[in-house]
Image (cartoon, rainbow, N blue to C red; front, top):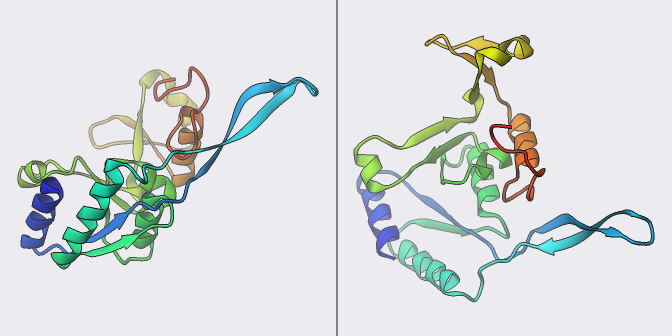
Length: 192
C-alpha cells in the first residue's frame, strides 16, 4: 500500500492523470504439448490454466490498493483477464498516453508507448525507459549484417539495426517464450 500510495501521490502532484488497471480473475488457457498420445504416436496437447492469485494475500492487497486509489481520485478499471491487454487497448484508442509496466507483453497486445523501470527515484533522475512501438530496433552483429539487407539500416552511431514490428515481437515471444506464448522452443533464447 505504501509503495502504491507514494508513487500515485508523486504522479498526481506532477499533474499526471492516472488510469490504473487491475488484473482480472479470469484464467487464460495455455495449450501445452507435454506427452505423446500412445494410440496415435502424435504429440498430445493439454489445456493448462495459468494460475491467478485470487484468494491470496496478493489479491487482498490489490483490492486494498484499488480502494485507496479511488479515494485519491484515481480512475481504477478492472480487466476481465490480462491487465496488459486492457492497458494496450486504452493506449491504442488514445485514452491514455502510454502504459507503465515492466512487462513487455503490453507491446505484444498492441500498446503504442511503454514506460519501464518506473519508480519515484528513476522519475526524479529521468531514468525511466520509454519504448515507442513504431521505433523498436535491434542491433545486428557485423558478421550477420548481410542477412538483413532488405530491412537493415545504419543508426547514427554507425551500428547496423533492423526495425521490429509488433508481428516480429510476437514471433520472438513464441520462439523464446513469454507469459502469453508459453515456454517457447527449447534451447532458443534472445541470443540464439
